[in-house]
Amino acid sequence: MAKQEKPKITTIKLSEDIKKRLDGLKEHDRETYNQVIEKALNIINITIRSPIRGARIFRNIKRRKTGKERVYSSIPKQELEQETEELEEQEKEEQ
Image 1 (cartoon, rainbow, N blue to C red):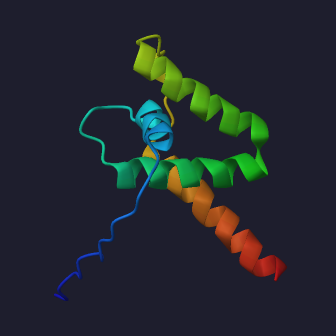
Image 2: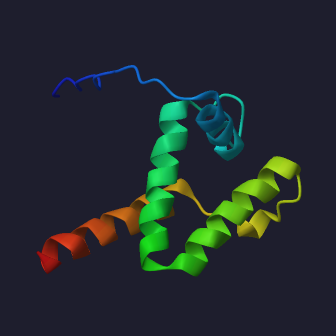
């Protein structure tokens, strides 16, 4: 079995305003900024393909944070990742 390499870590500087905006995308306190940024980038990729779906995802995050989430409105992480992969494959084919 091959040993998994640890991802390289870097430090970035953010303004307090951007940090607060990232905090607004956190769905739970233990979510890292790396996870939040990754999630936001995946949602952006989905939004490029389907603006309505992207808006719905962001709206559902807000609902979860305010406690107004309906259980069926949640979009699983695997689905976000799958749509991102599909979009990347489409972009490669177009080039």
